[in-house]
Length: 150
Image (tube, rainbow, N blue to C red; front, top):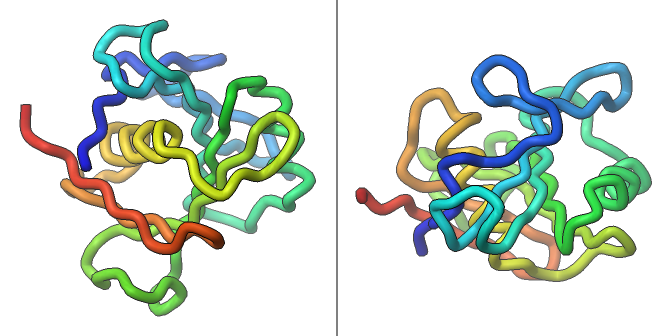
């Protein structure tokens, strides 16, 4: 699979390097709104992406509050897997735990939010510019996304 998420990811607040932040537990987390399945802003299928690659995990209650605030069909939450935490994925590929929440509840899988998350990670978060990432979800198992060259 490849991400066709918008290169011009929309954000609520903008800052250096196009990063938006939401304050949580006294710290800032990157928060993106990405339009999947398009290369144009404000088209396609939007999803919010909350990236927590450092620090303590967010509580389920805090995640639900963020998803309600984003008020999009889905908000994905990702945290980097530590070595050996996620089974069934190559150790040399960045791997993240992923959850998808609507403004009201968690859902077992969301394709467009997974692609939006891949775009945010591969284009804006990961410094070593990998071509692929893996996600470990509670209900859907391991999901992989690979970026194709244009």
